[in-house]
Image (cartoon, rainbow, N blue to C red; front, side):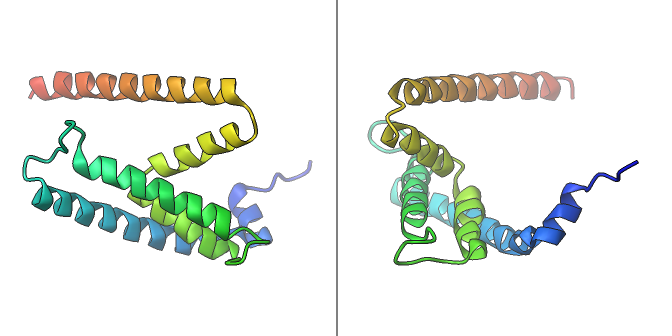
Length: 151
C-alpha cells in the first residue's frame, strides 16, 4: 500500500515551507500597521468616521491594502522590473496585506475577473461577497449577543 504524502511533507520537499516565516512576519507587521492606522484615524477624526459615515480606519486600510497588493502583484511578478523571490512576494501579499486587510486580496481577484473580461462573474462575485459578508457579520453578532446574554 502506497503511503500518502502529507501537505507538510510536500512543503518540505518542494521548499514551500521556506515562505512560512516571511508570511508570519509580514502578517504581524500588517496587523500592527493596521492597528496604528486605526489609532491615527481616530486621532484625525475623533468620532471615528469620515463625513459620509464610513469607518475611517477600515476604509483607509482597505484602500491602502488594495493599492499595495495591486502594486506588489503587478510589479513583483517574475518578469517585472521589481522581480522578487517568492518569499518576498508572499511576505507582502499573504503576510502584510493579509494582516493589514483581507479586502486587498478580494480587490485583486475582482480586478483579475474584470481585466479578463469576466464581467458577469465579477458582478456575481462582488454581490455574493458583500451579501455573504453582511450575512456572516449579522449572524456572528446575533450569536455573540445570544451567548453574552446568558452570562
